[in-house]
Image (cartoon, rainbow, N blue to C red; front, top):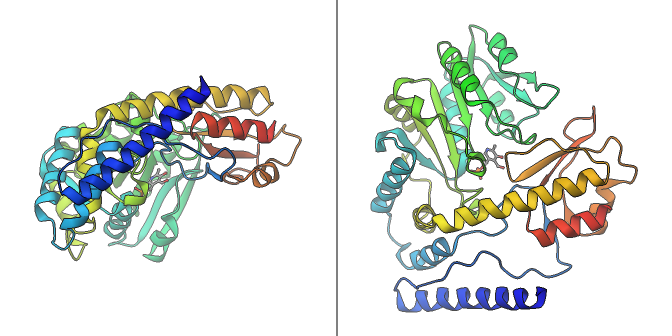
Length: 369
Ligand SMILES: Cc1ncc(COP(=O)(O)O)c(C=O)c1O
C-alpha cells in the first residue's frame, strides 16, 4: 500500500514537473492535475519551525508562476488590479479596502509606520508573533506586553485595561502564534469595538484559514481604526513567494498607501500570478486543511502519549509543554535532522512545532519517543 502510494506520488511529482516545463516552452497554460503530496526522502532534513504548508504551492499556482517568468520584463499593473479584485471578492470587501505587499511582514511594517507617526506605545500579548516589534521600537513607540491567560489565550480584558491615552496600536494574532489558541468571535468583536475608540487595532489572521471561524473583515467598512492582516504564506503555501495583504477602511488603506513610495508595487509578477491562481485552487486549500487536521490530531495524540501536554490548536502548529519530558528534546531533534523552535515560556517549558506531513510527524515522534 505504502509502496503503491509512494509510486503514485513520485509519478504525480514527475507529471507536475513535466507539465510545468512544457508550459514554459509553449507559453500556454499547462493542464495539471492537483498534486497534494510530493515525494520526500526518508532521512532528509525536516523543517518544523516556520509554520509553512508542506504541500504547497498549489498545482495551479506553480503552473501560473512558471508561466509568469516570461512576462517579468514588464510591470504588471493589470495583475495587481486582478489580484486586488480577487482578494476583495474572497473577503467580501471592496477593492479600495485592500493593500497588497511582499508578505504580511511588509504590511505590518507599514502599519507600524502609521502607528508611530505619533510617539507612544503599542500593546501585544506575551507570547505572540513578535518579530516586528524591534522595528516598531526603533520607530519610536514602546512595547507593552500583556501575558496570555493560563490556558494560553489572549487576555482581552487585560489588554483593554492596558490601553493608555498614548497607545498607538494593539496587535492581536488570531489564532495566536505560538500558542495556537483563538479568541471567541463575540469577545473579539466587543474588544475591537471598544479598543478602536482609542487606538489602531491590527488583527493578524495569518492562520485563520486553518479554522472555520469568521474573519473580522466584515467590521472594517464602519471602523477606520481596524486593520486585518492576511497572508498567502500559510494555507496557500506561498511563504517563499512573499505575498500578503491588509484589509481596512478605504481611508485607512489610503493612509497606509501614503507611507509607501509605490503603492501595491512590492509583489513580483511570479508572486502575483501565484496568488491569483491560488485563490482559484480551492481543492488544494481544502486538501491542505484536511491533511493538517488529520496530521495535527495524530501528533497531539502521540505527544500526549509521551507525557508532553499540548494546547488545543486552531493552526498548523502545536504548542506543548516539555515540563515532564525527561530527555533533551532539542538534542533529539538535532540528531535526527529535524528543525524545531525554542522555549517560548520558561515557566512550563513551552515550545512549538509545525505540523508537517504525516511522514514527517512520524519521524518526529520516533525521534523523541
Ligand atoms: C502570525 C504571523 N503573522 C505574520 C507572519 C509573516 O508572514 P509573511 O510570510 O506573510 O510575512 C507569520 C509568519 O510566520 C506569522 O506567524
